[in-house]
Length: 235
Image (cartoon, rainbow, N blue to C red; front, side, top):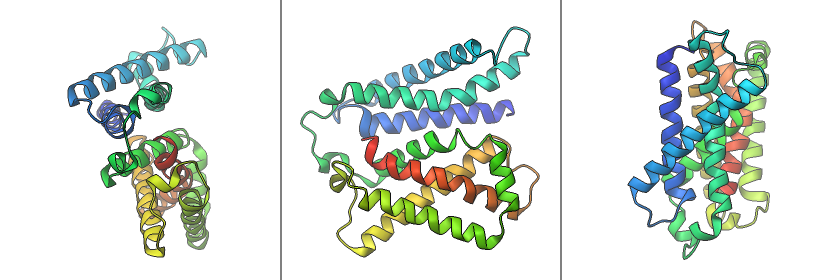
């Protein structure tokens, strides 16, 4: 990853942390200053834990160039930082949920942020692998369409028929149009996150439209699972 894309990756992670802490991680009366401070701390912990884990595993060391070391740390730190944020919210869930009702928490913007967090958690670990490129280039348009339908179907199942505890508070399923609208929005989030992550990792550089679409649809499957589950579980 080039330094500007590494910086963009860090900034994107920080924005997601801000959104998660605003809509799910902290009390609804928490100020933006407190949200920003918590987000900075979580991002810092993600970077430190990433460096520690990579060093322990022998993936970074003093013999490597500083650019290579920083790139490895940044790529790994994103999911760790979001994990730190989610873990903090879950461990302190009793305090953050006090006096909060479903109506207080459920907003369209909040659902988008939580969906993005879930999609990043799933897709960021898959995007750097070669399988995404291989499958994206080998699959025919008909198979890609089939994979799109499977992703869409799985997203609908998780959102509306998985019986997650409290799911009825977060996702509307009273009409068919509401089900379709929620599923379409979730899949759109997944595809957008997939395309953004692939671009950040340089997977879309110098390739044709067919391979761009192929890779995005392939990565869209795990991203859809993450976005759908994220809208329910991360709360």
